[in-house]
Length: 71
Image (tube, rainbow, N blue to C red; front, top):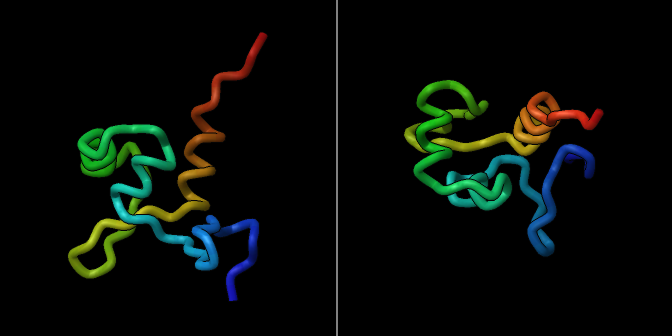
């Protein structure tokens, strides 16, 4: 079972891997931007068969690493 700190709640279902649309929504980006960033390996992604998925934990880490601190 997954721990709550590593997952995103989606109603009653908790999921760790997001599809492109969900990842775009999570990051407030356009779907095309998420595809481009994944292709250029700027955004961490996971291939599950032919499907592209995004780990919520890795996305949170990405946001933390790219956060600009205030002065």
